[in-house]
Image 1: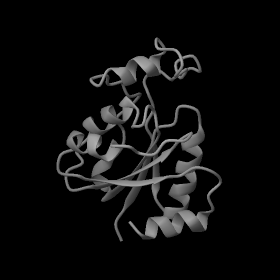
Image 2 (image 1 turned 120 degrees about the vertical axis):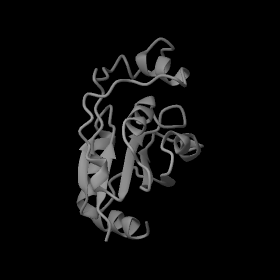
Image 3 (image 1 turned 90 degrees about the vertical axis):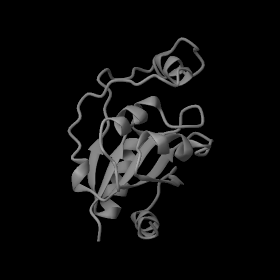
Length: 157
C-alpha cells in the first residue's frame, strides 16, 4: 500500500475538519498548508472587490507566501490535496504549495469544500503547476461525512 499524505489549506476551519476526518479514515499523515499571513474575515469577504482573497483570485499570477515549507513530499506516493473552492477553483495558495515541492511521479487527488460550486476546471488548471504528477479530480466533501464513507472513497483511489 502506498504512503498517503492529506495536505490541506483551510481559511475558516471547514476544510480543516474534513481533512482531519479524511486523514483518520485513510490512515494518512496530515499537513496543513498555512499562509505566511493568516486570512482575516475581512480578507475573505468575496463581495468586496478589494479584499485580499478577491485581489488574489483576480490575479492568476498571485502566489501568497507559505508560513513554512516543511512537508516531506518525497516520503509519499499519494497526496490528497484539500482546499475550499474559491471562485470555482483552488485558492492561489494551492499554486504556491504545488510550485514549492517536487511532485514528479506522485498521484495528487483533489478534495474540496464548497458552499455550492464544484471543481470546475481545477484539475486542468493545477496539472501544469506540478509536472510529472497525476492530478485527479476527487470529491467535494461537504457535510458530516462518516469515517466509513470516507474510507470507502479512499479505497477507490
